[in-house]
Amino acid sequence: METRDSLLLNMRPEIPSARITPNMSANESFQNKTLRPVIKLQHQLLLAAFKNYINKHKNVFYSLSVEKKLDYIENAIHKDMKFRNSLKGIIIGQFTLDEFEIYIQNSSALNKRMMDIVKERLKDNLLYFERVTMLMAQ
Image (cartoon, rainbow, N blue to C red; front, top):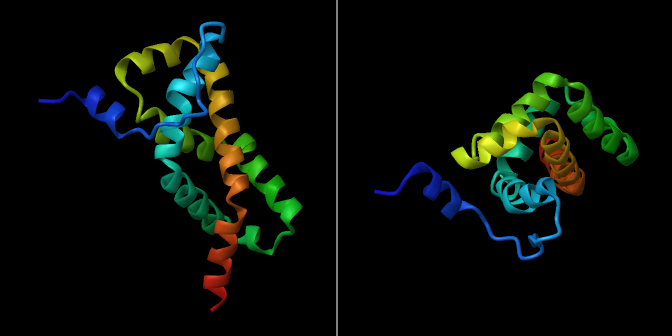
């Protein structure tokens, strides 16, 4: 019978560009080995979480300019602690026990890396949210 940890590791997508080299810092190595694959695996859920965040905040996001939408994403992740903690939970819940042990030893720096990656993913998917707007208008 497979363990939870082996099942989690087997589900993760491979990211060829996420190389791990001996001269990398421990945090960079954790980012490439764990954070990036987990965030890629959770991509659709992260988009759905942000779409829900937009809806809970009266859909103001949809009326903003592109520049203001990027600021909105930035502010949502950096200033709304409930939302930020929700995003962290979506990601941390996919860690193996060993990864969680590494994470808790340096959670502040790893949280920053984690949220920076999520923020960039959301920004890179502005068109996804535009499609949602168009569907809502129909």
